[in-house]
Amino acid sequence: MSTNATSKIDVRGYEERAIKALKEFGFRITMPTVQVVRVFASCSKALSAYKIHEMILEGNGRIDIVSVYRILDRLETCGLVVKVGTRGEYIRAEAGEGYVLVDAENNARDVSKEDWESVYRSGAWTSVRMELKVKSLAAPTLKAS
Image (cartoon, rainbow, N blue to C red; front, top):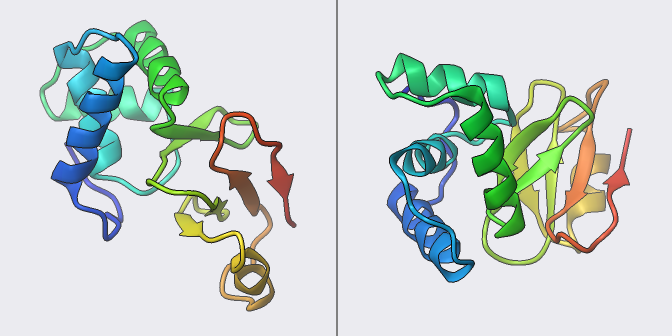
């Protein structure tokens, strides 16, 4: 599996947290589920289901696209990934409260509730497409552009 722009989180830590959360929600842990979790553990970019599928196949894994979508739904239910944008892309959700900032190149960055405005205004992440997603399933989506 290729890795793109890994963040500072512990890859193994994300995998363990994801497996634990899935079990707590009553989901079975299958090899396809582990493969999708590993993609998110090793990548901090927003990814489509088709890109996840492609990455798994490139790593000699076996999974069909329908399974990828089902697993994404489960991961989102458990709060392990966040859906961003209107293009159906997902990024891993880090532990804790805050926001996820996504730029035009699909790079994702966690920001705290207090810091999101200063990150946006700093100009460090200026782009045509910039989104701010609340890392909570019940919270509304905020967009900045």
